[in-house]
Amino acid sequence: MSASRHNEWAEKSLSGIEDAMIYRKLLAIAVAGLLVPASAQATTVSAVRPDGVAEALTNLGYKAELAKDANGDPLINADIGGWQAALMFYECSEKTHDGCQSLQFVANFTPEKKFGAEEAVRFMRNTRFASVSVDKDQSVTMTWDVVTGKGIDLEVFSNGVDMFRSAMDTLGTEVFK
Image (tube, rainbow, N blue to C red; front, side, top):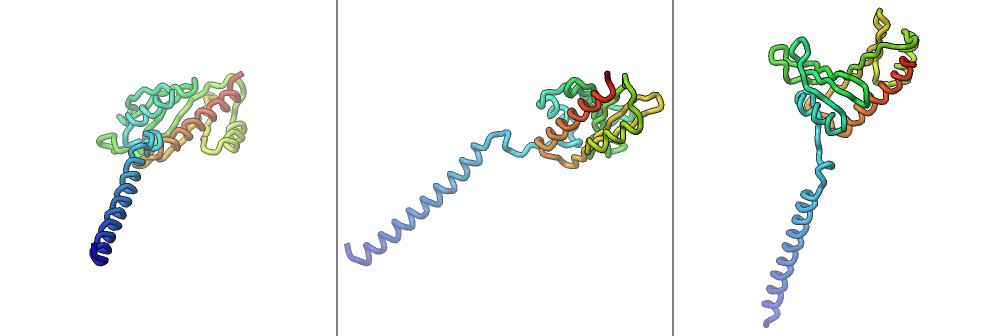
């Protein structure tokens, strides 16, 4: 084999090897993408899809029943950590009652011990996202707002639900004997 033919053959061989290496790298990247566990892939929860919110709650181990409120907007009646709660949907279309953009977790308590405005203010100082009101009949309502827009990460939603449950646990110890 002449030197020029040998160089030409070597260049083709190197080019083929480089192509094979690039192909293998691309194949490895593609396979790695397929092997990512489903739990690591982006999953979102949005008030736009009330059934998806109910499903997310169920998948987190809570009871959730999809219903409608008096205005026709979606509503979820839930049992979260042994507490009865409701998820109200807001910023929905007035005509179609869909396209909702936010949720409000709501829990009502009928206290067995004194819990007034001062206790509500103290509770809210210590519980960052909770809002608490005391009605004339002394019933206590805790709300927790979540803006979802087109979707929030399932892990973020899960953390919010856990924080709401923890706030209900804390409020429960303050209003019940």
